[in-house]
Every structure is written in C-alpha cells, then in structure tokens.
Amino acid sequence: MTRRIVPDIIKDQKFLGISSSVSAREAAKLMSKHKFGALMVVKDDQLEGIISERDISNKIVAQGCDPDKTKVSQIMTKNPETISPDDTAIKALEHMHERGFRHLPVLNGETIIGIVSIRDLYAAAKDQLEDDLKDRDKFIFGTGYGC
Image (cartoon, rainbow, N blue to C red; front, side, top):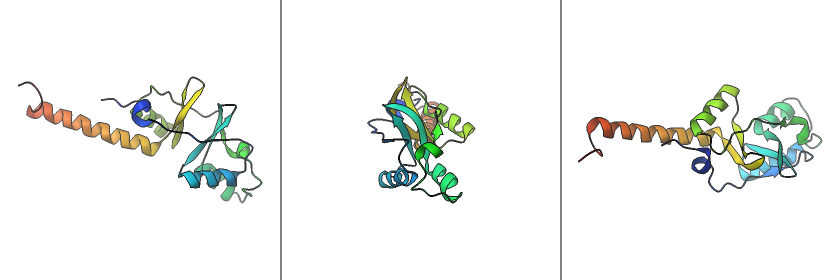
C-alpha cells in the first residue's frame, strides 16, 4: 500500500508556527521544549519560511552571532519548498534527499497542514518495504492467495 503524507504520516498533527520577529534563542527554546527539529515561520496563517536546528547551528553558533539579537527573519529559509498532503512518502523522501532537506512543510494550497521530517518518512518507507516483502512472500509461497 502506498503511503500518503495525509493520513499515513500526518494524522492529527498540531503544528507550531512562530513569527519572524522573534529571536533565534526563542525559536531554539521552542524547538527544544517540543522536541522539534524545525519550525514553520508564519504570518497571518500563511507560511513565510522555515527555521531549523541547522540554521541556528550554522548561521548563529558557528558564526559567533548573538541568538538574542538575531531575529528568525535573518536566518530562516524564506518561501520554502513544500509538499502536498496527497504526495507519497517515497516521493517526499526522494525530494528531501535530492535537495538536502530534513524537514518539509505540508500545504494544501495555501493552508498549512503540518510538517514532515526525514525521520517520519524513513519510518513510513521502512513499513512500506516490509509490507511489500510480506506480499511478495505470500505470492511466491502461495499463502494468502486463492484457496
């Protein structure tokens, strides 16, 4: 069975959006508190960007910037690529691999649905491969088919 982003990966996800005007430290605190690797930057219920742990590490810590004085707007990825709820987990995983992403926002048109991580997608791909192998074995060994 092909797994779709919704409902197979994202079920009842409540996304946490932040404003681009908050400090990088506040963004890092939110990520730490909720155990998120990335946050969507939102204005008026519209996606403006995405900020990740990598952004904080590479653009603040490694550069010696002050996380209290650096705004999310200065380090976020603006207008990030997104995926649709109807996309498959495998398609999203391939896209993330090709582009070097670890998180992708999920939008239905302009409506924010949630965010998927590469970890979520690997788990779904693993489950799908296991199901495919079980189906193959049933076909080869004749169990579960016919009489």
